[in-house]
Length: 205
Image (tube, rainbow, N blue to C red):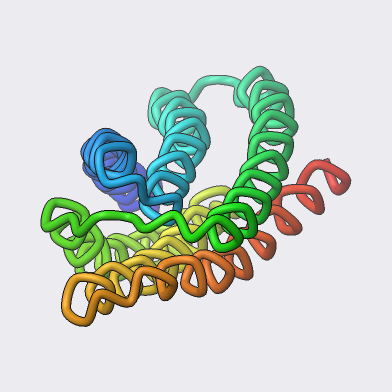
């Protein structure tokens, strides 16, 4: 049983490393392409990737310590502090998306088309559910609530990416510049849900 658990923990570490590497790519491409195109929607998606990267780094640290049979108390303390940081950052991102979308709609700010943004969003729609399935499977084997929570976050990221993709594609095909802001408000729904879950995690900790 211990050998099986160790194997699953190592699998969890590998999938978390892959997840972190992808989040770095997603963050860099989304933020740079979003700023270049003047797309609030795409930029917010990149910032959310940065926030998820923080959570993923802490989880990877936890799994590595567990794999060595170390004491996870110190990690749990760090997780609690990181949870506060994530909750505050998500809350600020919600405010940014809402205020920026309302302002941009008011002044008719038209984001440019971005093939790079469409590509990264489409890739995230495909990759994140796959990562979520593996994380969920491994978390059930090692009874890790942290990894199970990360699996849920990956699914949320996929929904966010889908919202971003729809907004970018419709703008590119039909010139519906305003649709990106509508998509931003839909994105905000997922973001608000993620923020609420982060706050609840802080309170329960």
